[in-house]
Length: 308
Image 1 (tube, rainbow, N blue to C red):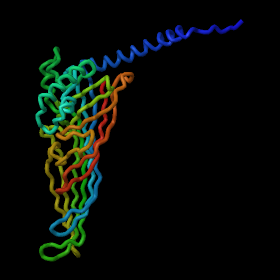
Image 2 (image 1 turned 30 degrees about the horizontal axis):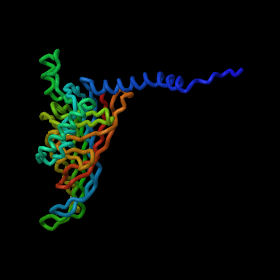
Image 3 (image 1 turned 135 degrees about the vertical axis):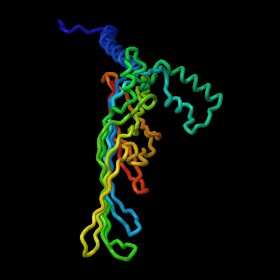
Image 4 (image 1 turned 60 degrees about the vertical axis):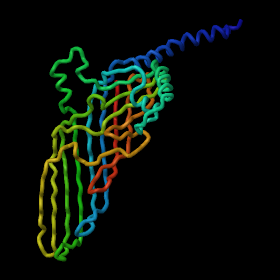
């Protein structure tokens, strides 16, 4: 007698479906939980680093230089202002009016129809602040407007000139060293500065994060030491110090134009959602620059983030 009993195809399909269906339902439920979450908790870090060398023209002659910059801040936020449907970024993309032009009536009607069709699988979140919490205290609401995000900066620039000529025709060597190191608290984010959009049909998300902040008068001491040496004479040192606000240094900090980048003090982080992971996390890199001695100095932004 045959010890193995064949299973009818219909019964086999039913058996497979009975095993797969709960898993599919669980995944769908998790995706739905992602979309319907009233709050997302965000942790992120933004760093900008630059290592550069070049030559600066000067009144006495060319000055080769090297510079290094590291600028890092981190923050935690509660995205507790949720709206169903596409957010501002998706709407702007659908309108195709990033240049500020007004869409035609026909285009507006098409957009309205498309937005309605997206309502069941898209949502967006912003930082609403403690003021949206029913049990928030006055102290918690006031704390929203106080600097609380750790920040640090480390900058060094060394310019070296050899056989320069002064106004009297004498030659000399000059070394100028500029340093700026500091750490403190800055104010990042706030209403509208950070937002998250999600599309569970496309399994995509877009997270907008700032790379600028309000230092609220927090400063670091900048020191400039110039050492001048004339032939046959002892070096002469001139040392100057000044307080520099965190949000004013470096000047001209900006993202380079790119597919994911957004100007105006924010960057756009795009990715695929994996509901099974129970969170959204990633690390993305952007090219950027800042202004130094009237020259664009290149650097790299690195953003690390986790949403739960």
